[in-house]
Length: 141
Image (cartoon, rainbow, N blue to C red; front, side, top):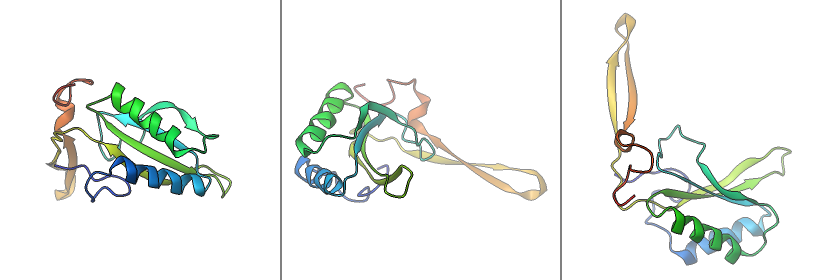
């Protein structure tokens, strides 16, 4: 199962050239970038681990891609995403967010159904990856 979160998630994985083009677009719009990673990509897990600090003063796409590649090297079996922030409206908002690396095997989610009071039915998502401890959720990690 392929996790579909963020921009471009329904497309095939982006190449480094395509990632660099998106970085250039963000920098041309004066959006600072940050790199994040996780081994729990649950849709409600919006706070991933941050790789370094947001790159507020970086203007070269090669420098951002260098940080992405450093995160890839340190976390070869994790999900890694790149975020671009827009502060023009007086608050920091995410303008662009996309996954730049994913594990080779994505176990996916299941939907658990449970009955509530008054004949109501509730549903919960369960990530198969969370059946293993952090750091051992994907093959090879």
